[in-house]
Length: 207
Image 1 (cartoon, rainbow, N blue to C red):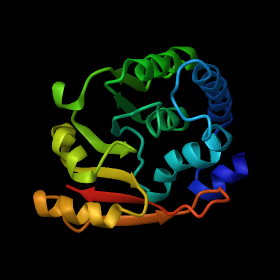
Image 2 (cartoon, rainbow, N blue to C red):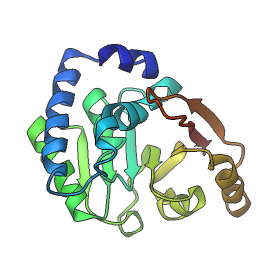
Image 3 (spheres, rainbow, N blue to C red):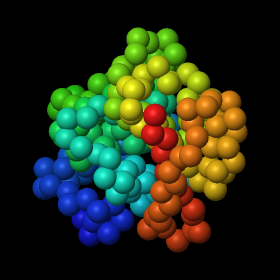
C-alpha cells in the first residue's frame, strides 16, 4: 500500500497516517454496510480508485502546510477526509448537505481525532464565506454549476480544483463562456492503479 501511494501520488506517508487510514477504512466498511456511502461495486477498488484519486492532488505541489481547503459536496469524504488523514498540517473543511454523509465524516473526525477537519452539514450557498485557499470538488456536478454556488468561499488568488474524467475540457469551455474568471485552466492528467481504462485529470483554475 505504501509503495502504491508513493508511486501514484509522490507522497511519503507517515506511520501515523497509515495507522489512521487503516482505522478509517474499517469505519468506512462498517458504516457502508448499513448506510450507503458508496456503491458496493466500488468497494473492491476503494483504495485504488477513490483513496489514491483523492491523494493525487499532492502531485500538483499546491498542498502547503497551513493552507485551508474547502471540499464542496464532500460526499463520503473524498478527497477531504483522505487529505485530512495524510496532511495533518492542512485545514480541511467538508461542506455536504446530506446528513448521513456528514454523520459519517463527523464519526471519523471524532474516532480518529482529526483536529484539522471541520464538518458543515449545509448547502454551500447557505453558509458564510469560508475564505479557503483551495476549493475542491469531486463527483458533484458540472464545473460551471459548482463554481456558481461555491465561488464566494474562495480567497482572491486561490485555486478552484475539479476532479474530472473525459468530459472536463468541454465543461471547462462552457464554464469559461459563463464566467470570465474561469479561463485557461491547467489540466493535470493522471493514472490510477486500476485495471479499467480510466482517464482522470484535475482541472485547476487560478483565480
